[in-house]
Amino acid sequence: MIAMKKRYAPLARNAVIASLVAGAVATGIVVVWTGGDDGPPPPAPGPAARTVLAEGPGAALSAAELSSLIAGQEHRLAGNPGDHLSWAVLGSAYLAQGALLGDRTDFRRAEKALRRSLEALPGEKGNADAQLGMAALANARRDFATARRWAESVRARSPEQWTAYPVLIDAYSGLGSYGAAAKALRTLEELRPRTVQTLMRGSRVHHDNGHHEDAEALADEASSRSGGKAERAAAQYRLGELAWDRGEPKEAAAYFDTALQLEPGHHPSLAGRGRAAAALGRTDDALRDYRAAIERAPMPEYALQAGELYESLGMAGEARAHYEKVRRLAAKARKYGVSEELTLARYEADHGLAKAAVQRLAQEWKRGHRSAHVSDALGWALYRAGRAQEGLKYLKRATTPGLRSALSLYHQGEIERSLGLHGPARRHLREALRLNPYFSPLLVPRAKRAVSVLGNPPPGGPVDVEGEPWTDEELPPEDESAEDEEPVEDRDDPSRRPDGDASRQPRDSGSARPRERDSREARESGEARESGGARETGEPRQSGEARPGESSTAGSRRPSPSGT
Image 1 (spheres, rainbow, N blue to C red):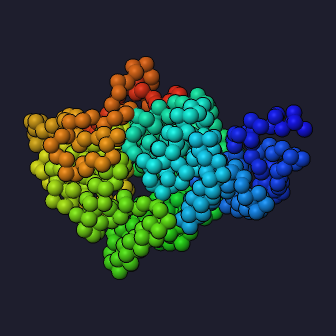
Image 2 (spheres, one colour; image 1 turned 120 degrees about the vertical axis):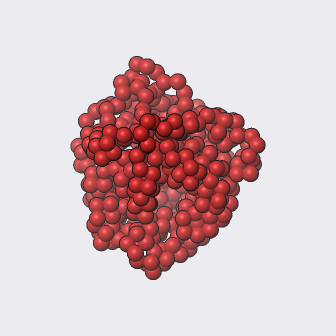
């Protein structure tokens, strides 16, 4: 018996290899072990416990599987309340359930369970599972700086613990530290090559660095490798988002349909399908999907999207009701520690008080949240508050990384137009419409009117047709270690270069250039004919782009909506 206990001691210290649940979900049976000198050692982990510990809110388990796992852990802890590992499993399962169902009350339960785990065994004594659970919880609450601190403390003690790296990638991406996210991905690919979770994180990192075809290929591979319906639904949703980003709503809707067939009620896919349906002119279907998404997961971003669709249809009363709902839902989320500041600021900038949006986003920047999304929103809010020149600096920052969204390009073009920079304004507005001609039901008509007003460049080639090239000195400062910095008011030191931006590093010359999509070429050639051959292109992707991780199948076939 002593020999057996020694044999299993290392397993008890590693939650990925040792769990107190034995196939709870697969069999519906929970093995309860109350400990004691004469009791058996902990059994080998069940797949549900391993998944939920490793993936936190992204755990690829269905609602029924999570419910079964939670019930089993609660039953076990009733007889053994000092079991730190079961508390960590329970907390991570609550977190995954809250993310899947959009129920933020589960986040509070998750935090209580994870803190109980840390009370039973502190992190510095080896409770990495609870620490990473806290990091994943902070990511789900959009507190990326806190998530980074939790996860980096685990990595410092155990650099080979692969479960730290998915959480780090999420945190770094949320902070806008795209180079750090790429570095963490490389380590994850070495420790866990070609797994579904690695492929999904890789898809995000490559997309953020402008490698869109690589991002799609990795998501497609993740879908083909997925082992369960929930996991495959997440991959199909990812493919749908990528299709939407490149301006293909019909293909995006097909991916979202597949995700919903696999996981009925998958609220991100409901909202995504609503957005695609609106772009395709199926407004009744779009409004139905938005209603279903809000009912399933009352999230402010869904209410904002629905409100803007109603406004574009001239339904002012319904639009106002949804805009008011944005505030209510954000306030409710705040009670559970979830930050909805970015969504609130977007609402305020376009439909409320622009100065309030600037204040909210300045606080986000002060916390170290400096992603392209925050840069875009802050730049636009500054413009709407009458500070266009300042706002342009943040929009340049937002469109400098590989993540060049149609919305950000539209915002930059409109600010440049207001400043009389007609050449770059024309270029960025046209690029926004080429990238995704459906990016917003409210803003696309405005973008088209602006392009029409600007017209074609005058004969003879004006000197500002491409605009003045931006320089590092034009960018606002970024110093991730100085979290108390106030960027909006710090106007005298705009010379520091963003840290860890992989998109600015020298690129290798040996890798192949990803092919351009036929549909986009068709749109571009059509625009060239309409403008008499004076079509201006966006910044071209250079050949031989350096990849942040292991080389994937860039230039491969386009994946089908079924993921096969």
